[in-house]
Image 1 (spheres, one colour):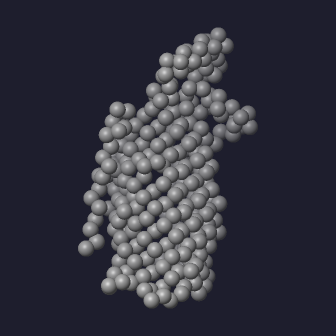
Image 2 (cartoon, one colour; image 1 turned 90 degrees about the horizontal axis):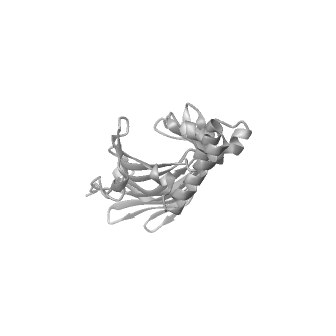
Length: 281
């Protein structure tokens, strides 16, 4: 079956194609495709019934040439601009599809987005670091200053794995690599309650920037001295980037989260289960 314009509620999903085969326990989904201008989703799986219990299982593979535009097409508040993205993994929905209840959703997903921008993020001091970073010299010579925009935080790669257990999403290895800093995100998000319990660690890329900045501001001799200081610190096992590592906790409601600074020594003392997994009984 083909649908030119599939919608769920007021969300337009795009053109859809569904091929199924009846099996003794339900329906095998041979193919479920959704096409949008900037997104193609390919999936297969099955919808099964056993002893009065319903279960939907899907293997998903989603590719987008503009993740920000794809989110806008879905009616999602745009917190991401541009970006090429891939999302793949498995999803499971335990119980009836109607009424929808995100506490029935489980699965595992791998995510990768390249060359995107997080909207409405204030880079702060990182903007200055980016301007003088040796690593960014090719960008500056090409007059490319997009990573220091006032309206967002540009990144080269966002990637990680997500585990979903009855509506609670856990991330242990999500990372963002950008010209300004490397960012690690860990913790849980409750999709049903719309609450976060996350730890975010920011490692500024300042090690290669300091000698260049000193040379520009105070002359080559000072720049050389700073370079030697960096090398001395490295020989003593001191990583200047790691020494400048910053931590933040992000907790509470999605719309009004509480953000607080945390100490580096607290990094290993993270609550592994901040949200109680809901019961479907």
